[in-house]
Length: 242
Picture (cartoon, rainbow, N blue to C red):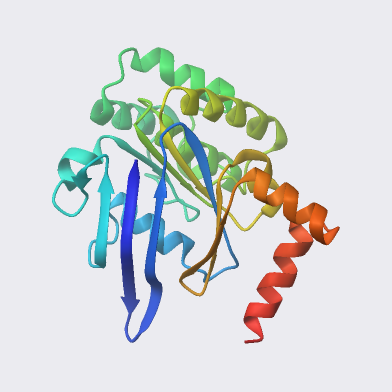
């Protein structure tokens, strides 16, 4: 289990994440939704170690992240929205670097499997600088999954993926969850998170508004006679007007 206790992250005088407490269970694909600026990316950056100055605690299966970054690093896979890769390496060379760090059992086979799964076969030997945004996004997701790390964080990382890649990726993440991995996906695309994730956490202005199970969502839709997407829009509009 990943436990986040009273996490607070400030930029100047304003909290980007404000006293957040939640947990992500193993074997689940957990979702985080919210508008731009809600604190989703900041929260995940703290989880993966990009942000190290914060109040509160992040604990991975009993290990305090602040004290065990080096040990945890090789067990974390992370794909961000803003992809920064090594432009003058080929896709294959970049993934081989990641494999050297993670040391999967059969690196060549695993790389080829992921390239095929996300539709990158045929371009793996091209320089990354020549990749489209969607291709770079796919490569970033492959890098996050390579070696099947215990903790996988996809931060708005699915936006550039085509429908076929999303289909195969969803099936694969489901398999990883069944293998007791921790998987966290943040997105502002409500339909995608609803289809992929259970539970789902709603954030707004650095705070957690509510945690939803799929059963909660079904009951809420029935009670209000609206889709969850409509309920979400109404809620965010109401919060913005406070």
